[in-house]
Structures are given as C-alpha cells and as structure tokens.
Amino acid sequence: MILRRVARPLLASIFVFGGIGALRDTQGHAKAAEPFLTETFDKVEGLVPDQVPRDPATLVRIDAAVKIGAGLALASGKAPRLAAVALLGSLVPTTLASHRFWALTDPGEKQAQQIQFIKNASLAGGLLLAAGDTAGKPSLGWRARRTAKKAGKRADKLAKRAEKSLTD
Image (cartoon, rainbow, N blue to C red; front, top):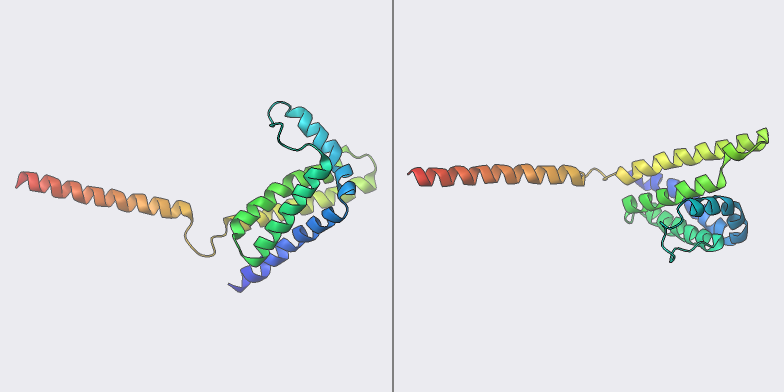
C-alpha cells in the first residue's frame, strides 16, 4: 500500500538522522546521557550483568547503531514490525536521558525540553502503530485462535465419528 511506503520512511528518517548525529558527536551525547545513566545504573545495581557496558560513549554508539539499522529497516520495509519495536526500545531511554524537563529550573529551557519530550512521545505512538501493523494480514493472535478453533472442530468431528462407530 502506498501509505506504508510513504509513512515508514518518514517515521524512520528522524531515527536515522539522529543516529548519524550521535555518531558524529558521541562525546556530546554521552555527556548529556551520563546523569541519567549513572542514576539508572545505581538503581539497578546487581540486576544488570557485568557484561553490559556502562560507559556512556559506548552506550551512545550502540544506541546510534540501533537507530540507524532499525531506521533503515523500517524505511525499506524489511522486518518493519521488529524495526519499530527496536526503535521504540531505543527511544524510551533516549527520551528519558535527553529531555529531563522536570529537572530543569529555567522556564525557557524547561519548555523547550518539554516540547521535545512530547514530540518523542508522539513518535512512540507512531512506532506502536508501525509495530502493530500487519499490512492487512491477520495478526498472529487471530491466526492462532482460528487454528485452535479449527482444531477443536476437527477433534469434535473425530470424537463423534469414533462414538458413532462404537455404537454401530
């Protein structure tokens, strides 16, 4: 459908662009994310395996790679539902790290960050729609329920046949 062919690249473009920007200015993004990361890792101490990187610059690079890779996948229609979920998983921590309007005191800066936060919440809504879009095909849940219903009907028929053959 033409709508998906237009909408997916439009939605994906901000993530690809943002991922490239994060790779170009990794240290700047890492500096902005550091307070959030420190606070978060302190809260989940002992729950997160030691193998998970804690260096803000490394995490920014990983996030950028997810944004670029999943953004390109969504834009091209390759595994768009998975790509949308990956982008959503990237968007939430990025939003919480970069647009902490509740922690600001300057009214102008607070309003600017609040607008960015709401913009990202809107993007999350678009990603949720993309993640749930089956492109007109029945959902996995519907197909599973239908298959179970058919299997139940077949089992009933077989049981009736077996019962009839026993009574004959």
